[in-house]
Amino acid sequence: MPDPSTLAAWGLPGLFIIAMLAGSIVPMPSEALLVAVITGGVSPALAVTVATVGNVLGALSLYLLGRWVAKGGGGRLGRWFARRSAREGPRLERAQARLRAWGSPLLVLSWLPVLGDAFVLAAGLGGVRGAHFLVFTALGKGLRYLFVAVSAATAL
Image 1 (cartoon, one colour):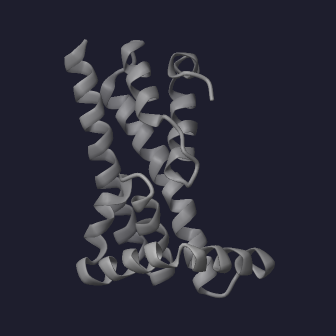
Image 2: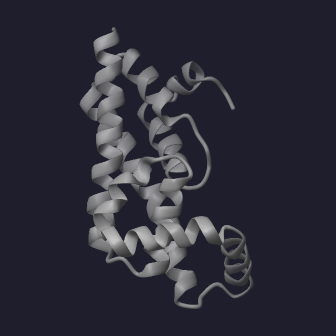
């Protein structure tokens, strides 16, 4: 993985791609890249918006995968994913239980490493409405990027 200063040369398109990958299950340094892009002179508001949209789209891919598998789709891929989910069973079951108890607003925590992915997947498997998923996931991820951007801007 290249360092964030190299990735910052990609500008906003690079930030979007890295944030989108980070929103899925691929670990990427989206926060570091956000800081590097802002330090490079990009408007913090624009950088936060681009990072948030990319990160939510990445999470949406995981949510839709959960919805697809829950509906019995996927054939061999769906069966592999179901087996993988069974291995991750305790974490996924805890995430589903928390979502049942607290509801869609719990998706505000979708930005958390590892646990956030479990919440997103559990939301897809559990049939959380798409609009609720988008609102609460975007709120959580946007606030996280806003916090990082404000911290970076005040450190400059």
